[in-house]
Image (cartoon, rainbow, N blue to C red):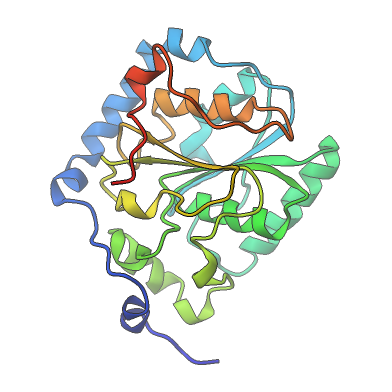
Length: 265
């Protein structure tokens, strides 16, 4: 196998710059605002449709663990879903045993509940979710990614990319890198924010997808995506779609105030 280093890998993809430094420097402050806004969003969150009890697994972002999205998972549980964390400790990338553990977990949960499982992944967790759906389409009901850099140019488009590559040399990655931007063969929603201060938003939306894919813009930070009430509502709306009855999210009445008009420019 040919060994490809980080610099060579960059040359093989379009060069997409990371977010503006101002967005990165204000990430922490904006996360605090998003966490505080949850307390003011009870009426919005109460409008979310209730779940049908099907299993949902939430996967954390790079360097995150199940504890980081615990409040988000509790909310989805209250809506009526059988919610689970990813159960792999801190997300340091596709290291030894991680993918195998996720494959076993998806198989176990889908058999336990007698049906496919929905996957919700933040950042790197969303990339895992997409690849698991690609490998096990019969066991995955839908995929929702939150600020996940699966698009072309991702190697230069995020601030943590060098740390990720140091921990996970590209020539040892067990995932087909050239296929990451291709939508998995299940209903797929890519949630992104132009205010993302960690990953360039251009690499977090789905381009050239199939008829059951959609990219939806929200306002907010990257690290606060699992604390953002508009994302909580949006994920609840997507999870409530019946199995086999996917339809795109439509902005109407009050939701048009919260979700920017679709635009890929």
